[in-house]
Image 1 (spheres, rainbow, N blue to C red):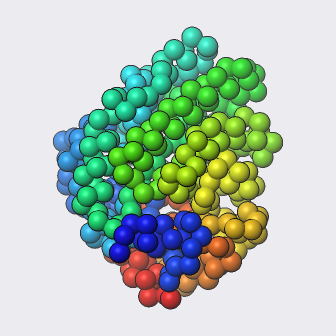
Image 2 (cartoon, rainbow, N blue to C red; image 1 turned 60 degrees about the horizontal axis):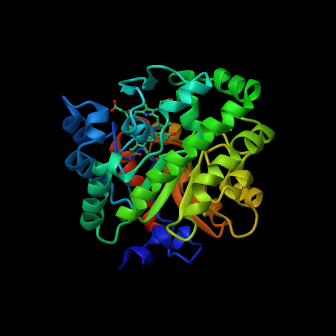
Length: 340
Ligand code: 1CP
């Protein structure tokens, strides 16, 4: 089998597949004891700059669970760090920014990203595509809005109030900021595609905090500037949490596959997306601890509802929680593989 004939690429391009391919957002990471062992004594950002570690951590869930795709081990802030933005990943918190972006002069810190800024990404993607054989490697980037939310707030936020207030009080600065971030995100995806990634996912994790009107005015043009120029390269997956009202708009940014969280059933998501839609999702990660009977029934329901779309990639509705028993994930993979 070749990568282009893999279940992931067949489903992503709307071709018939014998069953939905399955992988998990955040499959590489803290739920795996072998990951925690490898990370001892190495900071998250240092790990993201070390090709041998990136390669090994990316492969761990493929070996353990037999998932149908690998997701490149990195973080959405890696390209920002690579161009010199002061941001650290603090354990138990997430990305924390030294000097948040609040005025026009701050934009000078966001210069364009060049492949030469991230040689470890190119090297790790090249090694991985060799090691993975026909199993596709999914590259990824943070979408302009989600990146901006960290840069403006200074770290993780529940209500994104500073971000929304900048967007509305200084739209010129907002659009200039998102244009720069779109450029960086597109370049980061290009580096991964050029090195051999088979698909890419643009994470707009926090876009669901916005109304559709705000999304269309302040975010969509910039996400489109990331995805549209990549048309014809590899399939583009676009995902966010709580985006039930935004699904069709997110597709129109140039997505071949739309990620759906657990709030909207996949048959309803397919209806909202319209003809030709390919969906990814959407098992509620909170169910992973509810026991095998609950999980099995939920997996079957998701697969059944996914049949309403032209293609379905099985996933969770968001990332694997850190306290997940990895055997539950392996069992889900086995269940999906048993469903023809
Ligand atoms: O298997 C994989 O998916 C691992 C690769 C990966 C990806 C795709 C990591 C490793 N991060 C991401 C993307 C990412 N990073 C997103 C989008 C996906 C999502 O919504 O889950 C976001 C929002 C971030 C930002 C981030 N980085 C957070 C969230 C903070 C918040 O606002 O709530 C956190 C906790 C991090 C750190 C991080 N990234 C990745 C790992 C394994 C970790 C934990 C670091 C550690 O081990 O200390």
